[in-house]
Length: 158
Image 1: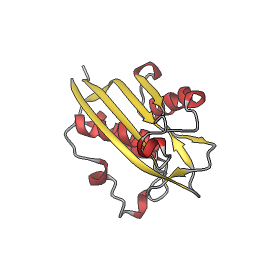
Image 2: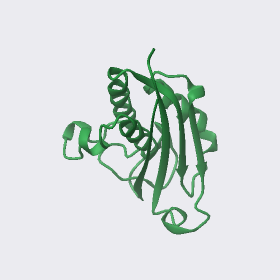
Image 3: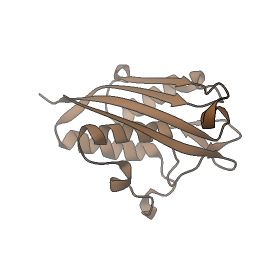
């Protein structure tokens, strides 16, 4: 088995959609980035890359490549899932956390889990998504950005 971990941060801005876990969430602020800036999916994808010792997202999906401009991060996750499969691994489990002041994530968690599981061709029971607030403290609490973290366990195919 192999373990990977990662964090991803994106700035919250006016005029962008808030997409986390592949779910568009109603909000007055959205995430700034080259793709849809889905920090949750980015952290999971990069944790998988880390477990495989393949570097970071920027190496494989550079923000200088117009191919990835505005794309759904679920497509990036699918591509990382293919890299994982090609190397003979599958998801053992994913544990992820989104730090965001508002809006509340609880109504969207199950859809996020399903989207991630579908993109990685795995069971939803292997995907954990949690959320917490910044309690008014730091960049998360001031609604300047979102932080997502993920740990993944990959198991070798038998």
